[in-house]
Image (cartoon, rainbow, N blue to C red; front, side, top):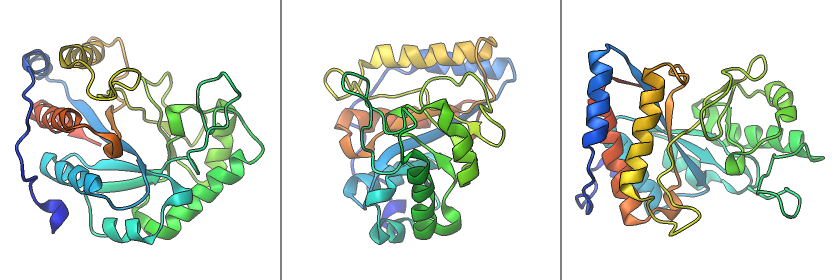
Length: 255
């Protein structure tokens, strides 16, 4: 099947992973395990980029949790993912529409707007209809921002997990809702919109692991890679593929 084949070209960029290999060696020496996971946002329909994402997930052995925008997703995407065990669909808000006040950072669920609960319910219902039992009831708010006042409504709607960005402050912000965030974003959103400077990016990943290894942050939360397949430049693709391969050489458990 196409999504199980290796990509046709080898990575064009080679990065210096020595610092990360050294840190992973420290984990092995300490007999520690690193839980990891992968989330990719903004899916609507099948694309060549989705095929490449799928191939990397299959080759790396790290399933990708695909955050699907419910309002615009339809049966072609459901058909594409039907037998793709390496892709796990989750709910990406409702319409990826900005409801933030003028001058504020973008957010669809950043405040409890009038239809927030209804939109969260509709998103889960729409994707359950498309994906059935393959859908994981994880809510991923667009732009990674959400008003905590909405949390109880998410639980009532049937969600069991929430995912944003940066290390979580608490595992269960409300009863019945587990937060599993992402922590690594390779895209330079506020600059080139290509890859973040690689040395800086890898150093940041090493610091995340060091904090976990030394009990400065929660190592029970899976370390999350966040990608956006529809806007990847070649160097972002190369980095993503190589990072997953390097992490899988370490003492990692895949979520």
